[in-house]
Length: 128
Ligand code: THU
Image 1: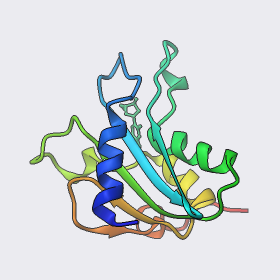
Image 2: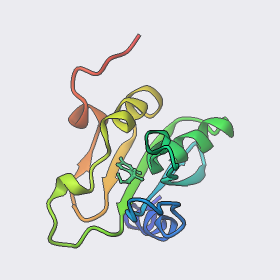
Image 3: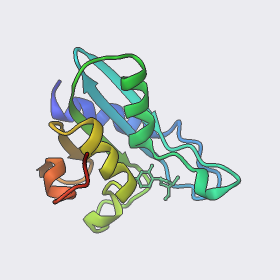
């Protein structure tokens, strides 16, 4: 799928985030096999139970047994265009999920032209 189309889907999906506490909407769209899956962040009254958008989308792809994840787009739609890159990057927990479950995916971050591999984001990752 085209990079920009997957990012656009991630941006659209982000409006569905359930984030009454942070009001920080995140959307993820990914390609797994020949299918596309989306996810949003889902917050909890018990804040630590929050699920990030990346893990939400990866869960959908794994549940569907869709095949290898090859592309993943992440959009934090509340971040202003001039904000630094670190405000749009996946958290540490999601990096570990990406290393485990999407090790060969190309990662697109909305607001930057650079493409990433998980080895860029999580060098020397834990694995068994
Ligand atoms: N969030 C994500 O969905 N993905 C990340 O990689 C970073 C953080 C969510 C969690 C929480 O709902 C909100 O963004 C603010 O941290």
